[in-house]
Image (cartoon, rainbow, N blue to C red; front, side):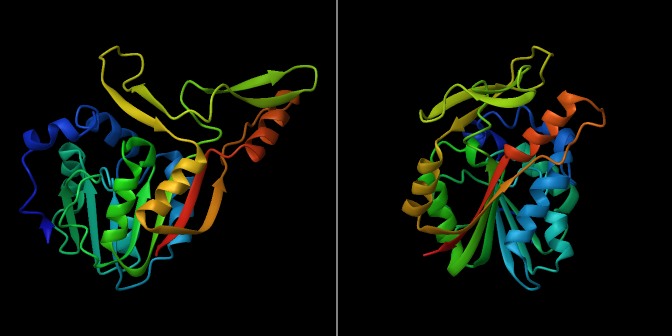
Length: 268
């Protein structure tokens, strides 16, 4: 299939790219084909373990970006990969690597809007590190439902909504007890948080982070027609090589506070 002949021109979806076109080059350098350090060591291993892709399956990746999952799934000998993303520039990066593969179909589309790509033909769906980028979760999960075959499964990995909220969660140090703790300034209130990209350059590019409490995320899945059957909380693999009380506390905190959370759901 390769490049989708029905892909809209970039200017027709610019208003719905949610700021990602402007930062696509930066993000591709950060994540690329293989993934960031966290992708390689935490996010992708968990996603593939929960997804358990099988030879001959058709899989759709929602908010696929520049296609960090494509090579991993093709290595599993799946029959078809479809990636959908609102950013035409991120899709261009994915196409530059995999657009000539007949198993790969990459589509520029808003995952919150009805689309012909959500056609009930997929064995499984994924959405990695993008749930917090989407303004309408029920609409997105409804499209995942529509894309899957009856009984099909979906795996979503996202920032942990309890412990990783931009500008609202921070690390702290208690010198008396020699512990590193997680300070949470806000949790239950849904928030739209602007995220500055190209930090330190002052060029003004921003994307939007949509924080929602865990109950809202789970309820949105249910309203969209998906039932959660498994969950994993994912912890940092990074450890300080230094010695001393702070390093011990840092290690302990890394084992107590998850950075990400992963859900496996099935189409009801």
